[in-house]
Image (cartoon, rainbow, N blue to C red):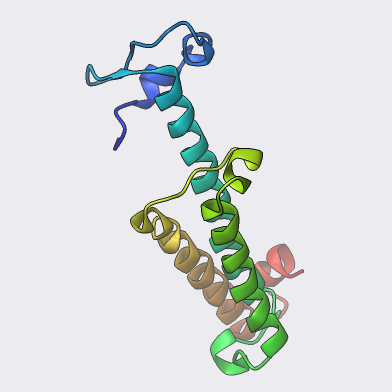
Length: 150
């Protein structure tokens, strides 16, 4: 835990976390947090969650391009779709880093490294769906197709 709050410590912490009067809330490692620091951490988590959704949506958009064919067979020739991938990422960055917009939306700028955290999930979604499509192509009408074909 980069910020010192282990999951077991978070259970039942909301009342103290939200209290403006408490400026010495101790985390799992003994570090004390002021109300402002806690809110900054909370807004950073909101932003990281939002960015994770955006990056996982890349994978969802790519895997929904085809129902049976591999994305490697189909390719990424739809330039409007490619523009959409770039646009949603730029929009997420604007929401994260634009002054005053962060205050209005309760977001906080992320370190670059935190943008990379959802990348393994992006690849997990891609690999899962490529394997699913491969099985559907090899066994048409089989169990995998009946249960997962949309």
